[in-house]
Length: 215
Image 1 (cartoon, one colour):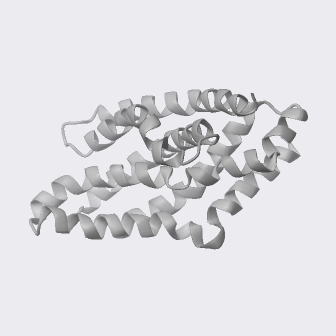
Image 2: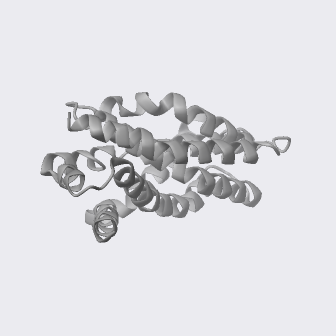
Image 3: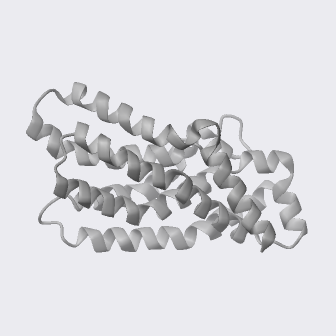
């Protein structure tokens, strides 16, 4: 248990160290600043499409740091040491998912406020976006750790990491954006179900990938 707590706090410090805490915030602000230039100054159009862009940016923000989620521990032999001491790979993956969810999730929710303002989202839509992202953050973290585990042994693996998990992330994007539709009341339940499913299966899938790195 002590080793797992140390692993959790070390991953969290790695996520927030050297200014990385603000990386999702800056990324969100860059997206929110650039997107209006692409769609033009039409405020109603920006308000309708900005929420979907927030969800795409959230997925990309979760995948930004996949290079440091698993590969450094693999190269340093940390994963081997944990395996020798009898720590299951699924438990290691679950700890990493929890640390990543907090590491990028809290800055993500902070960045939502200025980004939503730049994307002409009103108060009700901001609240809906915040609720949806809070529900989806554990699932996004699971997909990021799974992608990191699958690509840790590949050179330039981060370039294809997003492609590997994109099919699994599509339901999150669909139901998350669907929550913004006044008629999409059932979207929040579907989003919660998909997020729960991905959060549950994430440690097992990532654990299997971690075992594969040692073989």
